[in-house]
Length: 274
Image (cartoon, rainbow, N blue to C red; front, top):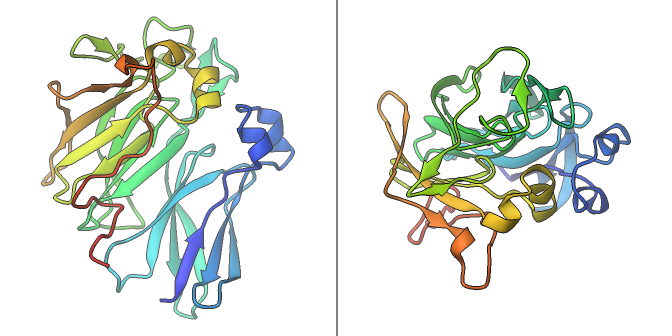
């Protein structure tokens, strides 16, 4: 298709210092996708997603015959499908969203999910996303790419867990703190990676050191963690592997923060056969 699609996070001098809502109002965070002519290395179309949307990862479907894919906007917490129209132009549609939660004891009266990463299974059937502030990882059936259906969900942690300073004011549930192999998980679901067979989902909990310190200060002393989930690839569903944990709080030179994951031999974001 001779196309590349890129997103925009924000101005480095604003996000590097942590999150300030005033920077969103000032237009310092991203709000567009850019469609490129890959051979000519030039932008041919801009796709607006809304002020302060903050689109991050961009993933095409793996099937090369289908000119479509997804991005997830972090702050608006929307799942956005992009696709090529019959006339050759590209368009977007919002096909899902993680609704904000009314809270007290937090920076704002409504807490966004903050979708920070997602991955698509190799067969293009499931999409997995991470909500770093709410703390959960979600599995969607995207057989109909215009109508994703939630089929799996698990709370890794997040800002709403019981025992913390934040309380929901909508009477909704708050998850218990997650403990795996005696270690309380810090942060929330952040980066995700999927095995080629679609049966193992890996989740890390650190976003960016200045943001980690702002939203999850205990992580700076206790480190981040890497978890693994077993995936039901027939009906959907996520089951925590309670025997798997990589605790970066126990590194020999002090607590560390884990982020990206790559699986030797290939995974669902590394197309090694190209």
